[in-house]
Length: 485
Image (cartoon, rainbow, N blue to C red; front, side, top):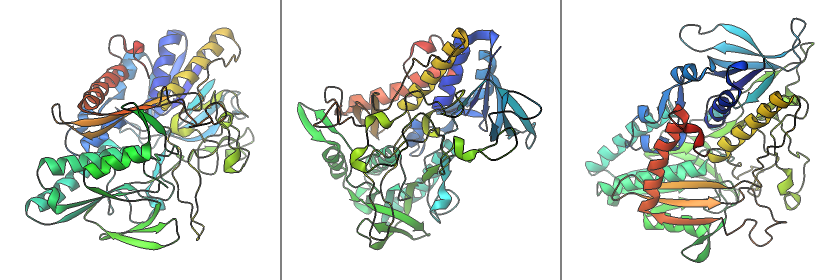
């Protein structure tokens, strides 16, 4: 009997664990370790953050789902990985600390034959003093953050209704932040809610981003087919903002926030500030900080993780000039090169390099987006890892025939621009591949047959439908396994 331990129950971890259990059945143990009590459909946080959905509409309890599936669920956080075991065991194991009410604080060793690290990111608000919930800005990175964002947004809207002018700033709160897409959706929804109340004349709405050009989104932008024409995501994004009277500041690395101002450095090396009344800024991400030790108890964290805490996988991490980066640098199986039974999925894996071109100010500050690895890619990677482990267990050897390079993988994204079954809007965009392959597609880096974008009400209906479809899948409702990642 094999034991597969999955660290994390987000999109990648939940996809991997539920697929593993369905395919392996009762003969093998699937163990999920996560500090969370709920599964959480993160893409709908933006609707929680503008009061269009409640927290309970974007989450559900994990315990019942896993009990029904036969998955062993431990509400705990992972502290350390011991891939060689120790004097007391020949198997690898993970030390965990329970976070649930019944066992909170208790520690345990959990042995494994296979380990999937799907812990996602740590929201590193502390990298930007004054940033984040409980300080001066809000976030939509989790459902509780999004709920708080809605409370703060309502306060600013109430002031607008009293005739007080308000400045709303949305974007990235760190020079190297990613998830521009989520922030972009949020600013469009904030603008929609203000306009719906006919308060736009009193609102100054500003997009603040570390992107070199708008529409970069951490993937160096894209050229897309739209209405029979080829246009850039720069033009696509700028038009969306202009149509909604949203101003923007780009090439900005936020380094501090206080109760009145956001302080940022420009790519030109200037230090500026921006007064605000309401701000939602995405923080920098890092790994969750798991340590690793060998059989002798010596620290081998650097074998498993990069300094930023993301796990080393089958990528080419050789330092190279930007012009020499290749699509083939990106991982395919997400397997650690030193310990072949350890994998990393979704945001937990360390990318070989950014997708967007690295930029530094004259002061030496790196100001450019980190590569996104959320949503659809996370689910696909989680399932591919699961399929390789399933084959390994059934065939008795690591065939590793299932692959999911982001340089060979497409992604679909629906950018909400306002919630409403009649007046809502969204931009639907597909990109293939996510990471440009300039050797295969020398003109644009991507295949324009599959890189397209359209905007309109139908996009909102599709995003609304997908919210319920993917929760249906995550809850394990009938025929869940037939739905795509």
